[in-house]
Image (tube, rainbow, N blue to C red; front, top):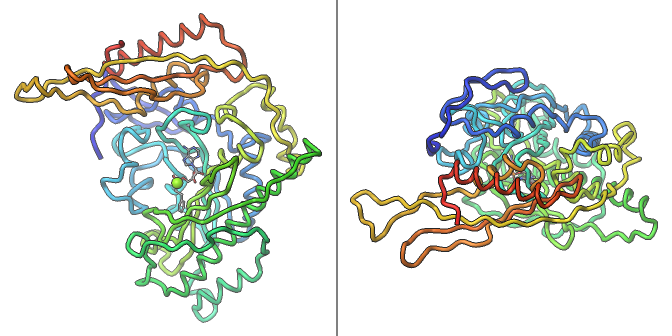
Length: 453
Ligand code: FA5
Ligand code: MG
């Protein structure tokens, strides 16, 4: 992947995450607030909505088939996060602008799939669940945060252990024991691209892939049905006049380097289709590399924050990180009795406070000194987002690029960002907002070398 931009300050000599110490290099790009989040483990915190969501899914995918793993270190090697899963060398997810690196070979995991290979290798069970905090550089808004949570799951069958080596028969027998549901699935069998998402005919028959796919789809649909029936029961408890909308879900084709074919499951929510999970038939190379070549099966990865937001009607992803008792106390006791789950009741919403910042990108004369067409240095959106979050923390609700233009004469490029400062916990004073905004501006200037307009 592309080398990082030269750092202005040397990286820290060492960083400690989850009790282990690592040595950063030029690639180090983890802001302090993100590093601090590695200690929180809210997905394991009793009565926290993310943890409650995990518990609900774990109760749906139960032992002995599915064994939960909840204690993997957030720091992984690039081999685990990418190579072991078949990501090509030039995959965009590897870029310094997309992920948080400790050093060239080590990063904060970007997905729970980073542990697939290790669990396939070490586990004797037919399936697993892995829940963890995951880290990605991304935008700032009410549904994006640099740290979120995923649950990964897989179910496999061992050709050397099923009766007569007949995988399809074994899978259909398991499917016949599984409950059904009566939600009509729109687009239950979307066609998939034969080249991008081929059946793995070198490793198993089309009939075997079909059986595994049927098991995958029913299992994941049942999971979504469970979540939505709990969400409805909770909403009805809060509001006796609550009229529920029927659950709608659909399968769409997707692409992942470690499954083929692959799909995403979407649900209709608040007027739009929302992607809740990615899934597919596991690539045989991954199982073989993990030392279990006779196993085959399926895997999925679901975003826990997104599910928790719709389960509890939580309007802003930052709330998960809040230590405010007005938030946390609303979920007391739910971990011990999932049936007491109630929707979140927002405490007073504080007014938004918008501030704009516009800047010119530094122009760089191209080699050869052709000043007629200067190129400008590049500013990555994720860098701007991170600087804003770094200075203003969870007080920023949202930040957007609202204008961008190139000066017709000078060729210089200008960008304008609009930042909404709104605390979840209190009303900000004007002076406080202005002070924060000034500090954001100073940091943009210093870290990106831009000229404020
Ligand atoms: C993955 O991360 C794959 N590892 C999933 C997978 C696992 C596929 C196993 C096949 C087999 P993706 O980037 O689409 O894929 O993320 C999976 C889910 O995580 C999404 O469907 C969504 O629910 C959640 N998610 C992704 N990005 C974010 C984000 N920025 N904020 C909140 N949730 C997110
Ligand atoms: Mg996706």
